[in-house]
Amino acid sequence: MRLSTLLAVLLAALLFACSEVVNSTGMISKRIGEVVQTPGATEVDLSKLTTFGWDRFYVFKPGATREEMCKFMGANRNVCGRVIRVERTPEDHVAMVFDLQGQVTHFEFHAIENGRFDVSFSESGLPRAGAVFRIRRNTGTGAVWLEPK
Image 1 (cartoon, rainbow, N blue to C red):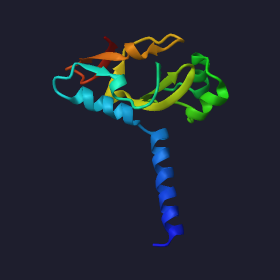
Image 2 (image 1 turned 30 degrees about the horizontal axis):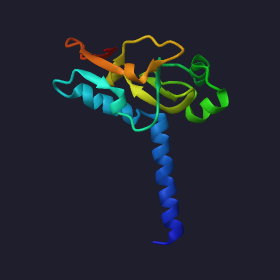
Image 3 (image 1 turned 180 degrees about the vertical axis):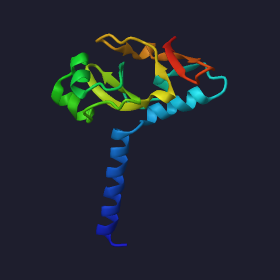
Image 4 (image 1 turned 60 degrees about the horizontal axis):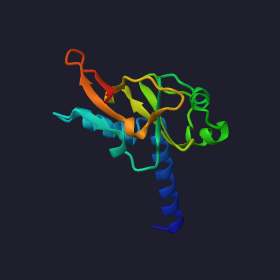
């Protein structure tokens, strides 16, 4: 295979992978889903599911816009907009935003079916040490709730 063809294939794969991360359920959400589906699991500790730096965590409701998220966190619109690259959160997802010392470090969509966060967030977010959630299952509806431990 010629080098130019190989580079084109690799670039296409990379672009596809990046768009998947931005426009669909993220890897952390999928890990949360795996934990809550594990028989006997009683908690989700976000610090054990992430590999990047963060000290604050936020969740935004379905339909939340990039403008609303950046404004709520007091984040600089230009910097925040480089990490949050979507206009609006889909109706079947929430937005998870991770922040390190006032800088947004990670954004992804969390599928509600992987667990509903049952917590109110202040403008200062939830500290990393507090991002441990008790798993509460509703056996009648199958819904899973994640509430602060």
